[in-house]
Structure formats: structure tokens, C-alpha cells
Image (tube, rainbow, N blue to C red):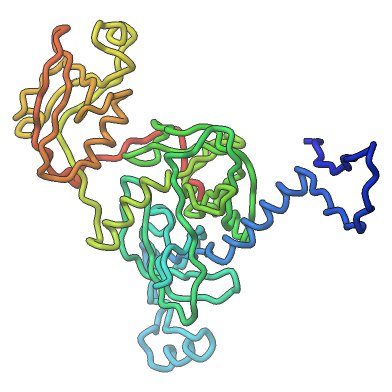
Length: 381
């Protein structure tokens, strides 16, 4: 970008001389690259104090304890080991402490930190380290494995910097994006890229996927850190990278995060709607069926006793609308149902044997034992 703002002079009254005005200092011109650079620097300075390092310890013991040497029960032998090795005789099973690192972002002055579920999964100890190197013991307030989100809490002893949350629905492909986190344990690393795509699914990280794709560098240790726009607002939570890919990272949209966090803070868990229907993408032939405009979701089967079965949904039905919202694909329908309050009656627009009908179903709570899909992507750290 080489465009430059310039200033000039416009001469008035060339035929009628006027008294000369006192000279004024011209405002210095600011180039577009300088203005953009100042924006990046300002956003980084504003958000870095709200980004934390999440340190996790997993404790485990060896499966097979070492056989005690002869005489290990002798009190003298026990005293010998205490004196020279600082522990009991070797008959005890040694404890192993496996550390791991991730990132997080402060979203509330009470000490609430947003991060990924896979960062704190199975943690025995959690340490939250702020940008000024102060450390606090953290605890898990709530987790949602189906979106790979977790909320931590620590007890601050001073006023915290809190990140502002933006609107991920307003994102446009090509917008600038800034990622802040702790890749490979390198604190407060800032990377810059663009929004490469939105609405990415079938990544294989979580059950409910609607990822933002970005080429801002995301590496192991960035997981749980924020993706930020040029307004200094968090628009996503960095969560995954493509195995073997460069410049392909994924973030959970902040609007999805807000809905999850509200329930985790209030209830400690997330309650989602459920119909009990197995869905498939439309085949090219079905997509050309009259009445299928823009997309839909194919009913593969219904679970006996589920709301879908009670409503009369049948194998081969094509769901083209949900409460008057057009359905693009089965992933969108899955998200819409999940966001529906439990107990609400929803109306599905269904194409059955080339005829459009309305089917009503009472949404139930999603069971907790549904398996998570596997896929080609892996967690970012």
C-alpha cells in the first residue's frame, strides 16, 4: 500500500488581493501503512493484559511399583532414604507430573477466564499467569466438551483488564485478524492475518462446529487465546490447527461462546435442545429436487421414543426449514436445534415425496452420552 495523504494550498481571490493571513503550521500527513501499524500496536497493547497463560499439571503414578530391596522395612533403612533422598524407601510408587500449557482470556473482573476444554481436560493443578508474571491458582468453573470450551476462575488481588467481546456474525472474509497467546510457551505472542473463511464445519474437533478460519499463526500453546478484530474486540477463541497444514487455524465464533459461557457460569453446564434424528447431507440428485431451494438436511433415521419419532419424521424426509429459517445444510440444522430452549415446540418445513408439509416437534434435552466424531484436525495446544 503506497497511497499517501497529502496537503496542498488553494489560492482564492487572485484578481482581488486580500490581506495575507498569518502562517499556520500544516498538520503532518499520516500514511496508510503508518495508520494501520498504529492500529495493530494499539490493539495489542489494549488486549495483551487480558490474555493469560494457563499452566496445567497432570499427576500420575507408575503402574508397577519397584520391588523393595531386602531390609526395606528396617527403620534404619527408612531413615537413610529420608536423609539422602528426601523421601521414603523406594517401595513407594513415584509420582509423575506432566505439565502442559495453553492460553486464556479474562472476560470478567471477578477472575473469569475463557479457554479451551482440551487445555484443562484432566488437570490436577491449574495456574493462571498474567501478563505481569503474577500467578494465581485456578479452578474449573464449567466445561463444554461439545464446543471445546471451558471457564476458569481465580481470585484476583487487584483490578483486572477485561477483554471486550465483539460480534462474530458481522465478520467478513478478508478482514484483518489478530491472535494473541502463548505458542510453545512464549508468553504474549502477537500474530496477524485475515479471516480466511467462516462457517467451517466437519473439522473433527467438537460436536458443534461453526469455526472461523484464519491464517493468523496459531500454534500449540495458542489454544484458548483470543482472535481479535481491529476494533480490539474478541471475535473468536483459537482452538485448532490442521495437521500438516500451514496458515490454517480455526477459532470458535464469539457469539457461540457467549451462549455457552452464560450457561456455564449460571448452571455449571450447557443445556441443549435435541430432536433425536440422524441427518445426512443432500446428494447432488436430491439437491436438484423441486422445492429444495438453497439446501436442506436429509433424514437418515429417527431414534425410537425421541421427539423426531413422536412428530412423525420419516427416513427420506428433507428438512428445508426450521421455524421459518431456511436450512442450508445439516450442520446448520443441528446448531439451530441445539440453541432451541428445551420444551419449546418447533415447526419444521419438510419435503416428503415432493410435497411440502409442516411437522411440529417438542424439543427435548440432548443426552450426554453421544459420542464425539473424529476427524483430520487436531487441537492447537
